[in-house]
Length: 229
Image (spheres, rainbow, N blue to C red):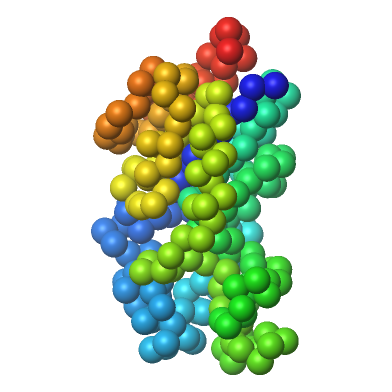
């Protein structure tokens, strides 16, 4: 099977009702990102940060995969599909996608503040002051603004191995994730799906599908399955 590598962003989950800060003037449900999504915020007011992520976790658990998520899972019948997502929800997995790399962490996991490798699943609210087995506080297993993105090291070789590369629902302005498009092998079929096609310098053999993720994925599915790929 050919390797189909897919980079997804907030636009694919938006149609499941999960809002993004870029769609709401720098706010997530009334929260300033500087106050809830940075290491400085965590040091200053961990209870506020946990309150915010507890709300986001509940939102994710209430959401359901949409048609775009399901179509990506269906493509596994035709290709060796690897999803690289900037999203922290589990909608790809719930739709049936088997290989998903979460660049920015997962809302349904928590980790030790001291040891990033000490991770546990969490499906309820995180209480302030809870400690991991190593004695450090538990924190959301999320990559905050101003933090490095360690999983990018796993993503780069995956993108370099692509036979086909697809971008769905991302503005390509958040780095280092946005830089992955520059790691694709030259000349492979490349597709971008978004309501507003982002600027992607240097991509050859590019097909742009300007549409919401659900509509764009339906079009892409037909192209890929019916096409000679």
